[in-house]
Length: 73
Image: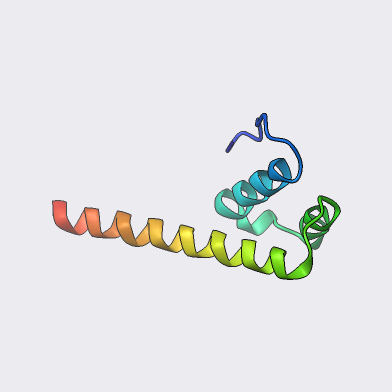
């Protein structure tokens, strides 16, 4: 998915692309990316929930990685 190649149907393909964008290159995220989610059929509460989920998973991944590094030190 990180390469933008998915066999997913809409809206899952747009959601996957957005998750990759926000995870890998958050500085490149723009308002037009949110508009793509809306065009794919997500409403505002769903877009907010998706953004919160992406942020939570990314945070948890960083915490888990940090804990693993501390354990191995």
